[in-house]
Amino acid sequence: MITVEEFIQKHGIEMTAVRIEKRTDMDDVSDWAKDASHWTCTLAYRPHPMAPLRTMVTQFSQGSAHTDKPVVEDVLDSLMRDASALDCDSFEEWAGELGVDTDSRKAERTYRQCCLLGDQLSVQLLGNVLFEELRDEVEPQ
Image (cartoon, rainbow, N blue to C red):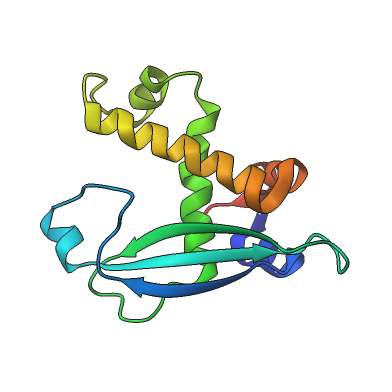
């Protein structure tokens, strides 16, 4: 197993982050979301020097105690955890593993968003081979 940081260094993954007022991909009106900092993050990876740059744009939030921009290690780790929803055959299985109410529409939206992020991480940024390496060989933070 390798760390997320080692994976990023090995493959030259980079990221830029731009602060935004609120996230547009979720309807969280909790006190935590109101106090958190929200970011649009663009991750970039070039499979080899002559290949086109592959990018993925995602939104990321961090609690109010975090005063600096997010770092690529935290964003990729979060995406990797979200992508684990793809390991489940259904929402009900995912909800059962997390102890989430299977009657919750909000939970089902979260599951679908996690699956979408996993697909984007695989298709847009990493490609299938590197995505499998991330899932099989990288230890979450």
